[in-house]
Length: 243
Image (cartoon, rainbow, N blue to C red):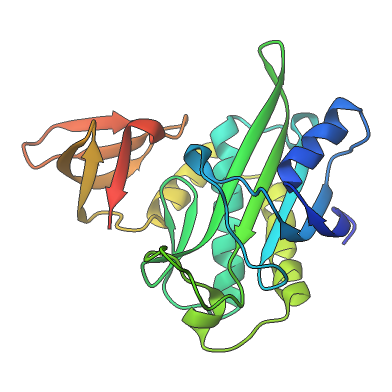
């Protein structure tokens, strides 16, 4: 694809870390992708590791320049990437695909993909972002990960990794090149969230709370309506969904 430049490697510690190293050396350009068949120190959200069976799944990172994307907010990138993966999986006939706020991808209430975005600043200005994506494709065993699944487990067939990656990149290019207002992006993103409009259970400051997802703020905060009528916004690090 012309929009992206794809590099493939057998094994590396972390594709995100490698692209950050290249960024520091100024040996990277917008659209560069690094795909690793084995990631020995993959990174997830909340400083967690992303564990992936070698050659069974897809783990890759993309370097994106703010100058090229011209996004209204860093969270807009989060929305675009999550919706691109959701669209790709729908195109591959994966059932019941939803986004779990802020950026996990579920199929039938099980996590099959995660996104880690690391923003790079020069002073106070966003200069670029590195988007790490991990997608469980053909892995079938997830020891001690009861909420994890894969495309194969959800779709019932094995998948060619190259075909899956190509499908994702087509959707990503579409999201990055079709100019859409941020408000429209936020609205569509919220509509595609797991449990949108439903009463759900959350943990907030180590205490259980109940809320109904009403939308998301431009900075990514989740808007919850509570049974007592109160509507509050929550940051990613202070609340998590119990499902």
